[in-house]
Length: 568
Image (cartoon, rainbow, N blue to C red; front, side, top):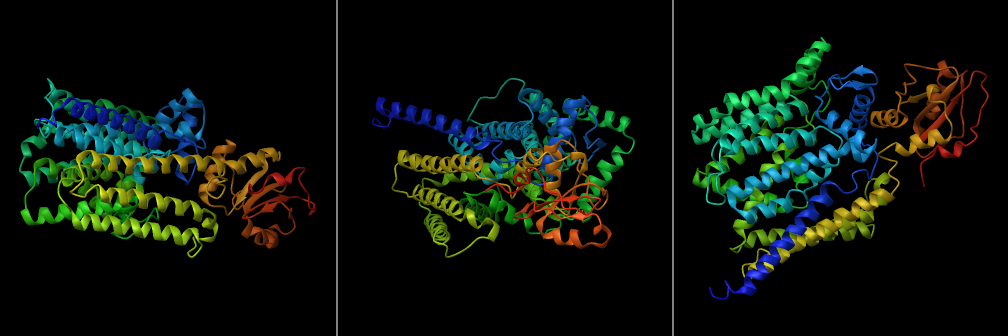
């Protein structure tokens, strides 16, 4: 005991705390904020949401979301407001559009770390601050100009406030703040209202379902009903209702389109074509928890077995289980499934995982260590096979083989170090050093990947380069049409060219340009209805082609046609 309480021991502990604090700050910055604009807008949602935000900034209409000049009620306005303000402050860019998602991820992480501090102590809170930001799900969605992260972040903070209202945070770890209940009620209503402004009534359903089952399992119905206190209801209404009322007054069809079509029908019918099997979100969670998937699986299985054997758990454990479990089950039943829907479940699951790491580190876990070492070996072996071309990716991604191999090496190394940290013979400083090394290795990987993304030509997933090429070629944009290109590329071109580019099949021109996938060139040139109008330009490279529509059948070449091609 004398040795443990010596000045050198206290000095080492203080140095370790400072080092951990620095590592946490670096982790939060690298994972959430660095290189937000490394690549152009990806997918169909990012360019559309960014367009709506830019339109709000330019027109000053902060009530009605408009896409290409028409009201668009697919999602509420919280992301649009955040991106529009970011555009005003920092200019229109990919990084500015994604900044609100990164801020929401940071706020949710800090709120969850506070809850971990109150429930389990400082060590669990520290490891949560290192584990949650380094998961693939949080990194990916914090770098997306989409509604998933704002929705998940605001809902997470609301659930943390609910835990305070229920009295789950009253323990020996930290003192109780004065008037905590009133503050928690007001904040709960406020952040639940923001979640409703981020994605709609799903926030009320997820929160209400989790609280209902928590009360069912713990028999604490009176505490659950505290959330219906007038203070929380008033805070919620003042936050969420003004926009809904104003938007409905200005747009009579708002509730029909938003509530019925984009909420009820999206959940109950496969109308939006996002059909996936019931077990879809199980696989999504495995990917979202990379590189901690092996540890997540072990902790989930260990916790389930313990719960089955004992048939009892602490109240705050039931709270986390109901929070994550209801979210996964609710969206698994839905007829429309997208990966981002299950994002709110990652926060409570990571909190449980962080507690599992801290509570399991003092006892030998032979099966866990063996599983982590086997996982690390498998990842390393796969990386070797990729780097030596024994296995291949899809042809269009084959050039990324070396990078994927490096990712596998890095995750394998961090998994191996993680396995070593559970050895019972290691001292506590050695365990801390190994766990910190895992995070440091992953930070190097994340930082390096983001730097590489800024240098690679990612023209296979974004169209920012193609918009620049069309401008350089002086193509008349009001004469430009597109034909059979993926809708994500179409929306991207619309945003970067700052105009809606019509589709050739619905708006043909007698004299103009058609941009198409290269595989459709022959079809365009041989179709009977356009045979007398088309002249094929030698203007294609890879999968893209730009054709000139001429009324006199002549083949016209551009002054600088070589610009419109995939970048080498």
